[in-house]
Image (cartoon, rainbow, N blue to C red):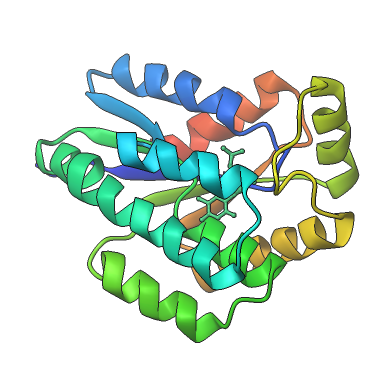
Length: 203
Ligand code: TMP
């Protein structure tokens, strides 16, 4: 039987990455075989593209094409083979991030996004997408507290991140059966409880 494909999304500082491994362990404890991966990245080539994407200024369409190029490689080398073997794949960001960041944040033409999505993964969408949602100010505070060098996206102004958040929320409205909102302005324990409930619905 084909495995399930779960993606995590949210604005920078939403704290989603800290829940990825926890969810993987929860699923493994149910006897499932689980791969954890991320975008941009996930393959050797994808990780090299990530370095460029997170640090080099580039034209919006170059950025979008590189996101999808890395995704094609990721799907071909890791995601699709794992799902075909019956493994579950948890991916920290996927195409909804391109929709939200390049589309909502930077204003990429929606039809260009749709054309690339159709080209790169016409027959595959996540079985479940968890959107870690929280107010911008809370996310910003978390980033400041982490006290590390900020990447190109994290350095963007607040209005960029607000547009990213709104684009994610619109996407949930358009895909209510695939996407679920996790209230990320909450304690670790409460977020895990929300995750358990949502996951139970697809296990
Ligand atoms: P991360 O910090 O969650 O690892 O994500 C890296 C950054 O890449 C994050 O700021 C969002 C951005 N990104 C896009 O702009 N478009 C995409 O398609 C993906 C996957 C990530």
